[in-house]
Length: 194
Image 1: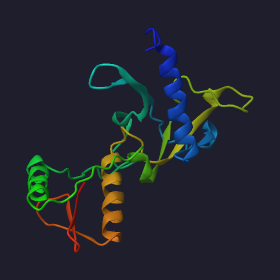
Image 2 (image 1 turned 60 degrees about the horizontal axis):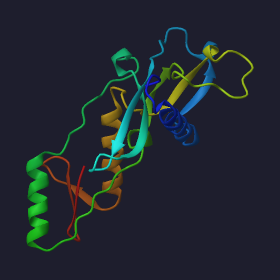
Image 3 (image 1 turned 180 degrees about the vertical axis):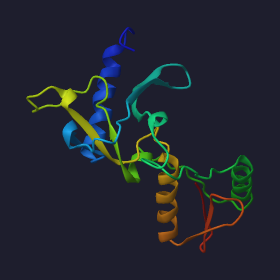
């Protein structure tokens, strides 16, 4: 990314992503010595993308901070990973019913969806490349991030997000169907797919 002509735009996107995580309390910066000695840290990974309009023009530069879930250990910093996903048959069925009954349909996009879900176990992550800690007189390598929310890339991220979304829908009066999974119905004929 740093070798590209638009590297400055990606650096701005990195700063925005890190700022969004910090302002939402997705992690706590702690001295490396406060981390339990038996617990290993995982790496942080940056993913970059140029988001484009249909005509090819660049809409925005996106930097996503992910955790290296491949470094997690089952039974130590994750247990459950399963999260159901909606299938295309359910989506098509719901859209056909909406068309026949002349119902309005809406799509919701959650900003930083996975990090809205709490992390059930402590996960410690190295500082992402390019991240400097302001106000710390010492070297940044003396610090690690203690994650409090599910970052993208964590093994349990999908599971945690699904549980949070399911709880929110049930709290709002939706009822979960047995089949198909990820299909929620509300008494006033509202449908939701997760």
